[in-house]
Amino acid sequence: MYSYPYDAVLFDLDGTLTNSEQGIIQSMLYALEQVGAKVPAGVNMRCVIGPPLMESLMGILGLPCEQAREAIGHYSRHFNREGMYQYTVYPHIRSILQMLRDGGVYVALATSKPVLPAMAVLNHFGLTHFFNRIITEEDNEKIVNKPELIRRALPERFGHAAMVGDRFYDVEGALQNHIDAIGAGYGFGTEDELLKAGATHVVPDTEALRAFLCPGATVPRGFFLSVEGLDGSGKTTQVDRLEKSLKEYGFSVLRTREPGGCPISEEIRHTILTTEHMEMCAPCEALLYAAARAQHVCEVIRPAVERGMLVLCDRFVDSSIAYQGGGRELGTDVVRQINAPAVGEMLPDATVYLNVDYRQALSRRHSASSLDRIEVESGEFHARVQAAYEELIHNDPKRFLVIDGQQDADTVAADVLDAVLNRLEPEIED
Ligand code: TYD
Image (tube, rainbow, N blue to C red; front, side, top):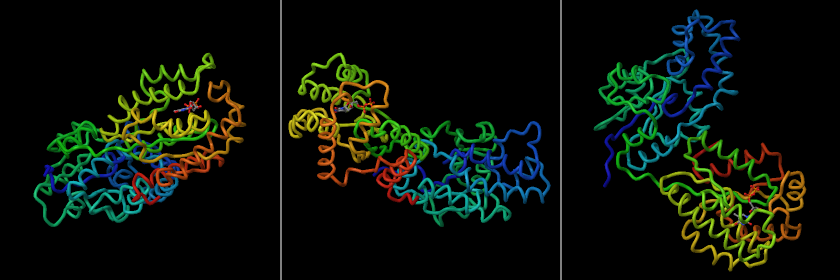
């Protein structure tokens, strides 16, 4: 069986698991403004990320104790309202935590953040379930030092443990507990700071962190997510928003589209969609979509899923079944057969369907500037496409995440994200 170098790994939060730069700095600037204080000349605001708040306010920003206390109240209010939502999870972190857990490694969090904001961030990003133990400060005033937080986060018994953190506090805390200190060089401290403090090893990015903590382990298979809908369902906008949100959650997203997604398939896309080819017959069209798909699956989708990526694909084989099978009336079975060699086993793990009635989709399309050869088709054509999609959904209700696409764009985006997160990690509570 594969064995990991450490049987217990502790992580710091800000600058190690999450990029909290904007969230923390903006909340701090707000707090300073509220108490009428200014950033002292020569102070880089990134220095306030990592230390406990009182220490940053008094030690780094030079506020007297009373003013610092008052500033903390303003900071917390701003953080809960806005700051927390400006966080992002670093790429690969989710897969590192998952791999360690799957490998039976004890995983804990040791952060100087007080319990409420720390838990709010962990819950918001659905990270809580990865940890065997979570140790935080109790509040902003009762400051326990980092070595003590690390001591509490360690399991009763362990063979070889490490603390991963981005500041010298984390390194010193680890060394005082006689465990390895791994410097997160991509965080808010410098490599120099980490090495001077005695880091056992410094990693430049989270990919290197994964290689260090899980050397030689196979990255778990990724996820294949497709998005479908009629022309005019708002699909492109929603795929943009979903891509952005999933990246903020730390998923390694590869965004692609059909027809297209790689040079050969993009060329085929042009051939299919140009209005210069109005004479193209339905079987030719169906075969070209399948040909573009074959190359796309082989060159992009399959390798990415095997590398552990979340492939977010704007349309896939369901589009062919709906448009060529239904719209062009070639029949679902014929289209499935044509696509069998292109798709192989590579069916989406989940498919978002933006449900917009074809009549509404049609009126939205009329406001678009230039329409392609499929979009210029009649209302009856799009009605048949819709009916074919409905049949697909009816026959495979588990795979489809049907979202009401007639709501305003923000509500649709929130519903799509909720449904997708639920499918990716049902443990995410938001
Ligand atoms: P899309 O890229 O969604 O259009 P746009 O970016 O212009 O909004 O899709 C291009 C068109 O191709 C669209 O009308 C649907 C059609 N299509 C099929 O008919 N069959 C297929 O297999 C695919 C993938 C798309």
